[in-house]
Length: 93
Image 1: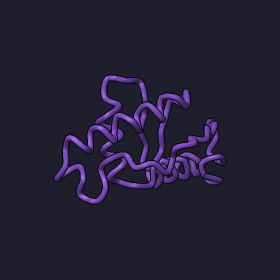
Image 2 (image 1 turned 45 degrees about the vertical axis):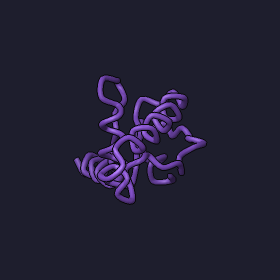
Image 3 (image 1 turned 135 degrees about the vertical axis):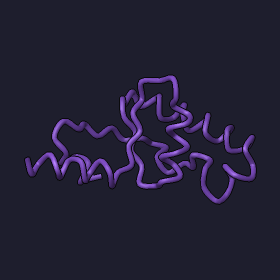
Image 4 (image 1 turned 180 degrees about the horizontal axis):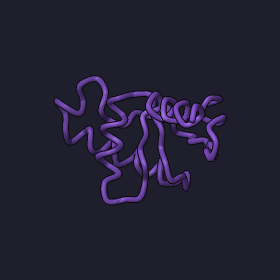
């Protein structure tokens, strides 16, 4: 969180439900598609309630799941290591 707050132009908005599962992990997305979608829809509601225009995650499974559930919206989904690397490269320019 502290590293994200240091990125120029980023305003960190706390998600009170950030530790809730997105429905992709543990093989749920692959083996229990209906359950995965139900969990994802709940997570989507939590994310949208923050009012943020970007969601970040350190989990590659969450990145894929959240990208899928945010299709058709303006929400950007970023994998934290990629976002940090991009910010670092911009700082070197």
